Amino acid sequence: MMTLGENCKVVDTCIQNGKGECHIKHLTDKAAMYDNARMFAHVTIPAGCSIGDHPHNGETEFYYILKGEGRFNDNGEEKTVHAGDICATGYGEVHGIENVGSEDLEMIALIVLEK
Image 1 (tube, one colour):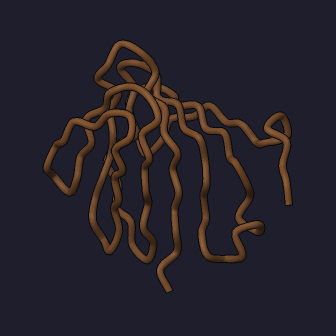
Image 2 (image 1 turned 180 degrees about the vertical axis):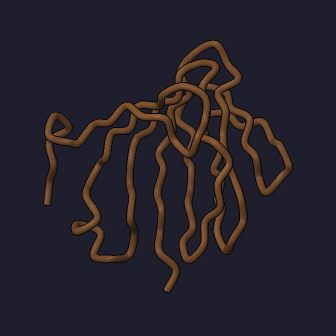
Image 3 (image 1 turned 45 degrees about the vertical axis):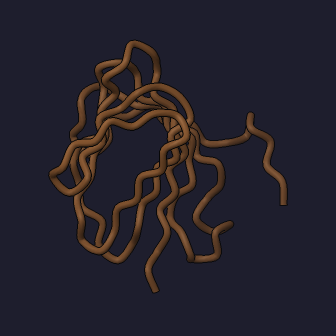
């Protein structure tokens, strides 16, 4: 299977009551992940915007930071993240991320279902 980037679904939206709007490019749909995951996306968070804090139950979400600088809430503990860093949250834990830099924060987000 192959998907042209121009055919990916793109959404600009506020995520989990965060600040401002984020740009989400869905890299595939749920059906293509054979019920093992529910999201695989390239997410762009503009400067000053965020994904609000939220829990993950029955699933784990990974962020792979591609560009920029963020403040990652890891279950109440704030950590600074940069390109190359990987964040994971699951098993009822809470996370969120805010762009604290002056350029866009870009990351790959993958939500894997726990079985």
